[in-house]
Length: 361
Ligand code: GLY
Image (tube, rainbow, N blue to C red; front, side):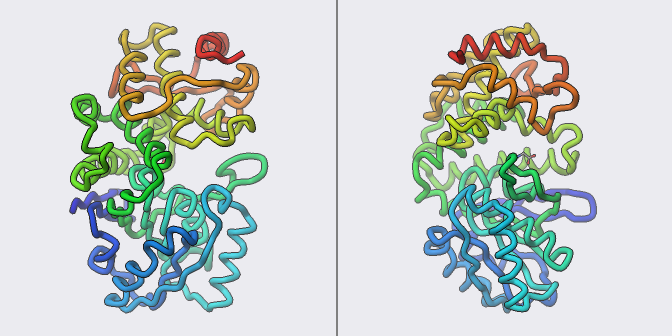
């Protein structure tokens, strides 16, 4: 069991990582004062597997769990589902000290965090991430949101949870594709921010790929430490937190473009990291060999490094909607592995040329 503190000023909290964390959830929660009920937001599949163990563990803390069911995946992050959850809390007379728990992947975490941050102007919130993506990234750092038809995460607030419980046992039953999607975020930390993790993945990713509990605990804890450090230094995304978006400019564009709606977040950011490395190489701003090293790592983790792309013009238009856009597209590019920088003045022609080399028409 590993505990990592996210040292956000005045609202520090712990992330507990290990196998069996949910079954001992009562031991890992901070003091929740007058809370008598925990409203657990989860889709039915996740609830079938984890609601009962969580509810039994919280009885000892005097908490009665109530399941609030939501649709699976990104489809849950709508204003309609958000409103329905608020009605359920109100009709069940949830009070200000009661706790909302997000049990599931990143979508449930974003949605339930936004509910917790806004119901009665804010009630305590606990994240219990059950996917690799959510454990290493989405559950930490207090980003909450729902989508609008016009774009992802357009409505939300920053609101830190009171605790994050990351049970690596929940990763054993993840579908291969979902697990791989999380590996893309792991690769992001390794390439952009943690060269020791990169070296260890390059040496031997077998334990991680076999989902051995010890290997999972080590890798999740390592990523969480990087995320915790980054969020503590820049809670509001004004500086180094932007580095966590490495590979995400193209990734988000691919997710946004209809033809690629089926691609997972991880598949999209995997291509995004290949693109970012090739772009930095083409501009001569990074050490040579970055793109090759990136591609080899991603391929060794079973991730896509080449594939059909939408037309370059559509991708460039989507770049302009990126949240990092500030009068021009800003990319996170690497000077070398472990050395990220936010680059404001990437010529559109350079981005277009790399997209075309990668097969965009
Ligand atoms: N997932 C990027 C961030 O939390 O800032």
